[in-house]
Amino acid sequence: MRDHDELLRRYLLGRLETEERDLLEERLLREADLLEEAEAVEADLLDDYAHGRLAPDERQQLAHRLASSPRGRERLALVQDLGRIASEKNGRVLPFQRRELSRFERAAALAAMLTIAVLSAWVATRTSDLVSPPQVAGTPTPAPSQPVRPPVPPVAPTPLPPREVIAESTPQETPAPEPAAPLVLQLALSTLRGEGQIPVRNVPPGTERVQLHLLLNEGDKSYFTSFQATVRGPGPELHAAGLEAREIEGRWTLVLDLDPKLPEGSYEVEVSGVTAAGDIEPIDTKELDITRNASAAAATPD
Amino acid sequence: MNREEFDSLLALLDADREAAGRKYEEIRTRLIGLFKLWGCTESDSQADETFNRVARKAAEVRERSNPLPFIVGVARKVFLEWLRKQKRKDRIPEPSVQAEEEPDYRLEHVRKCLEILTAEQRRLLLTYHADEQRIRSRKILCEQLGIPMNALRIRVHRLRKKVETCVEEKLRDLSMKRF
Image (cartoon, rainbow over the protein chains, first blue to last red):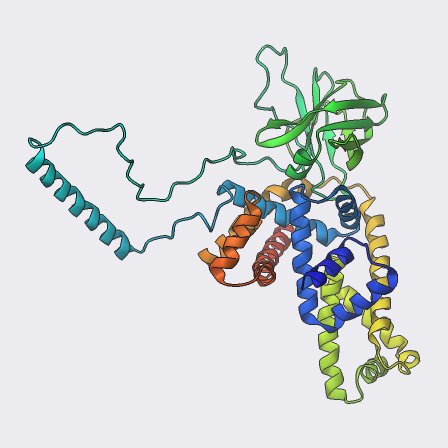
């Protein structure tokens, strides 16, 4: 079965030779179970991709495949959403969760606790003058009646901001002494949804500060040690290296200060990650149209 | 596909017309699955297009004992054409409300669609997708359910597919309303 999985995995990563691939695809048409297995293996791959668990070459191969797979990108989004919802529940949904008690069981438990409490009180009143004060130190701690959850890791605050959005908002972590809050343009990376729909955003003339917030997915954040971004458009090219992700409103974000006088037109934002080994890998390239319209609202979504 | 072409297609699949009809349905279902696996979002229509083309060539293919390699080859060609069209379409910029609002809706839809599962199914699916202590959690799931990892994966996949279908329907409803 492992060989089977491995074959499907290699197929999904585009690693099979043409002949091998054709034979497998013929089998996929013939064997219903195999198709289902392939879909399940694909979901595991996407899960590994979303959490940055793939080897660099596998990651690249899958990214290449996703680039021509609108449905694959939708599945990736679903897997990411499921992971996000799971992490809100501390990622230990089943094995560590107590079973819900029925009404009868709850009533029985309550009755048992009350009985114990009454008995304990009675014993205490009967023996209080016979024993010395309780020895706390060295007394074994009674086992908790409920299983103790391990420490909870920090969880992203909810609600999360939209991921495939260019929208202006004021970041929570704005330093107090800043003369003016920046106009923030958010751009989600690697979610691969809404591809082809180039967002248009208005930066009204007179805006004093403009920031581009590039939202990373969890996988990229953990996989890369730093990031670099290039913004190309009608104005001078902006290149920023050694960028570090900051957590803003629960999302790992790369922040770039843009020239507030940036001209109207089409822009391309190219983002790469730098691995621990120093390799630079492309993450995503997004397009963005900027308008400079005085009458249009800056921060109001359409 | 006209009547004559359809008859040729059935004859290609099996000499017995009834058996050919069953095979047609089976292969069509799997073709749709294969298109989905390739990443096609219009898999039903692309599967039909594949059969249309196969039917037109059925007479030439009939000599072959196994038509599946030919069908796969045609399907791949149809997919690549669809992909090219898709890429061309994607190059046309269209400022869209949907692109901005979909992600929020999407996550909310996933939450809502999880409710179509039973509490146990929901916990199974979410535990499987939890990043923290992933390997340990999945092993525990296998032990609790008494099934091997492979069977767990398939079980989770079926649950995820239910959620996926539900989310797709909700997003489709949303875009219909906007339209």
